[in-house]
Image (tube, rainbow, N blue to C red):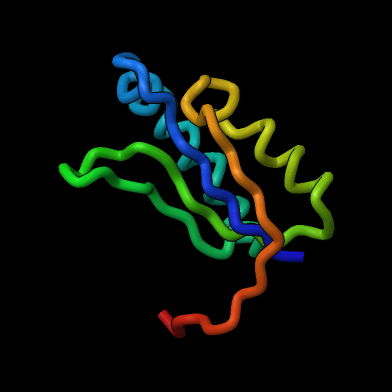
Length: 98
């Protein structure tokens, strides 16, 4: 089952520093999920000035409980970066070959 995750960072003054503090851990943790096909695509949401203010990912997992466990262990969750997470069932209709 596929899910779209829209995760918004906190808006307080310390939010960018929290993101930077755990960003490498977040990316390192995501790599195995990408290799296993659990994460189909992911990236940062940017504001008009190009600053990272959140993330959007598409996951493929057996069920919502599995997704919840994956997200709960993400350094952006445990590090207090993502403050508002929306999860929606999703179906990829087209996919790039690259």
